[in-house]
Image (cartoon, rainbow, N blue to C red):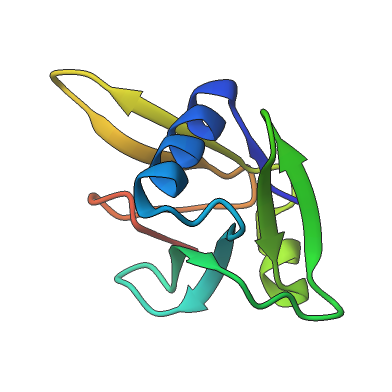
Length: 107
């Protein structure tokens, strides 16, 4: 299961509040595609499948991961950076043997 840093959890909570959707969870998934084989997908979701893995981070930030994605995200972490050189969410995944230049896909 992927983990969220405190910074990422705070940013997700902020985004949920801005959407007025505090009842939703952040779904993190891995999909086939991208220039290296797999790509990350993140979106707010209210549909929880019976086999979804769930975790809570920070103050009430729920994360959902489907079983197939969970295998590829085991030990991964999601962080958020807000700086001049880099801004946005970033996944560090120890299962990735190679990633593309844009950082959005891996194999």
